[in-house]
Image (cartoon, one colour):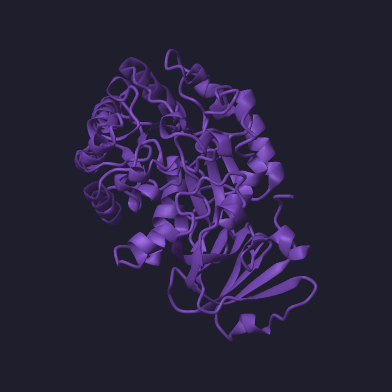
Length: 450
């Protein structure tokens, strides 16, 4: 599938940008060409060979969603996911850009590997794929990877992370923070003190004690965040905190922002809604890193997202083959899929509860992640507002729809969704990447045209 702008003009009739008043959005030549009152000048555009009219009555129009934290597994673990299947899932979830994490095989720690990922993503064409470069060689935490070479490559890497592992050595972390300043990069830290989490299986607390599973204390996350915000302040660099999950972590980030430290943070959809009580059934579907926390932590991260302490929602989409999850809890892999359910979870936990508006959703799922990843400018800019002349990256969602999640029917190659059988609100009806439809009527375009 080509990623070039389409010659087809789309008229999204009656769409509600950011949940506002209905308008007709005209997407042409890769940009938002016109925004007109419904029944106005755009009404004269009729369906034809090069014009497609989409009935968007009662649908919310959002800027294309951007995920700062996706595991696409390729190269090396194509049994779990490929760039093709993962980006197809992203489009189905309303995303137009994803950042692919570096813990592949081989690790994305050289210009050659990140360029490979970038080119495969470009050729797949479902979404823009921006590789994340490893901080350390082989994720070993011993020496810096080729940060400058990855930044200067065709992939233009600006986000660096050893996600899956913590950069636990403070000297290496300081050097990484200093190095990325040269090209306005950011280090995205997986905050997990390894000595405090050896053998840990789930959140340390009442449930872990009852189940006899080794506990994962909140302080293991919080100690690293506290250290790293101080390092970022010391060297004057940008720090991003991956998958923040505890009430204490929210408070540390809030304190750091109050001091003017250049720190941003993300929360995953599953940490907005699920708790460690789900481990009681020993279902490895709910085994994730960082672990599901308590109801009090869930409330704290929701409050942090609502007040802006937490900047973005990022999926941490972590697909696994069946055999890595269909086993006893201790042997199971950590991780959950999330690209196709993220928007629905945000709607249920934040929009339908009145804590966020649809304009806020655009901020935490599009504008802010694009800004943090430095992909908000240039000819392929993401996260831009729905205004005339801006790139036509658009997601249409039906907020009134309800659906029951079925992992077997999702576009991702893996079925380890924590929402199997659960009813969630909202349905992505259409996704447009620079004016080209990747999803129409809720289905990938190739299926629509078949």
